[in-house]
Length: 80
Image (cartoon, helix red, strand yellow):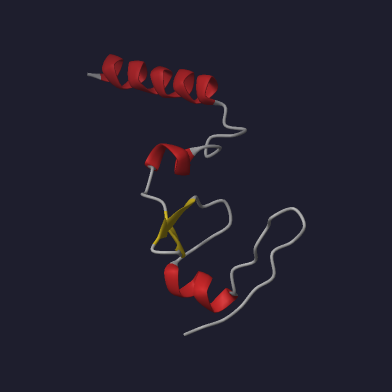
């Protein structure tokens, strides 16, 4: 398959939708560019679970949830 795209004045490039689907490219994903023998290639960067979790807990009340869980745990222990 061969297709073309236009590079914007900011250096941005739109990857055609069918190629994004085929290769699982999604907004926010990192990609690697490499050059070899006068050809430029693009490929998904290695999976980084920590980067993918960034923002996952935004707005979560972890302290409150922890305190509630601790109270429930103490209640279970006192029932024994």
